[in-house]
Amino acid sequence: MTRQGIFKHVVEFMRKQGKRAVSEPSTTASAPGELAPYNGCLYAAPDGSKCAIGCLPTFPSRLKDSHGGVYQLIKQMTGQEVMYLLPRDALVEDAESFLADVQDRLHDRLSVSFLEQLETAAQGFAREHELIYEPPKGVVA
Image (tube, rainbow, N blue to C red; front, side, top):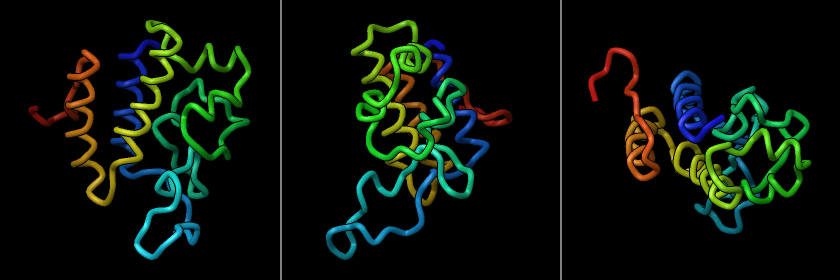
């Protein structure tokens, strides 16, 4: 997939899903009120929801229960899995950074008003990465 293809797929998937993929409320935060590592986000959650990277058709299903950031995830992959996951229109270092940014800005940072935040985040992300943002069908941007 290209960067544009990944962006479009993730935004459309997240619109349909309507929420982040998260674990059950965590008790692993170090102090009351603090977020657990990675805000409790999972690549694939117990309820079947998926994160921005986990929803990609090239995401290795054997890693669906992985935890941690995108860079740690990539280290767990075989060379062929990495090749299929990373956007093919970017250098490897840029591609890894791009996927980390997709995960962070189009999933991990979003909260309760997910869909409203998603559209704002997607518009900013598209501008910064020189991608084309397409508003949801029936909505004028």
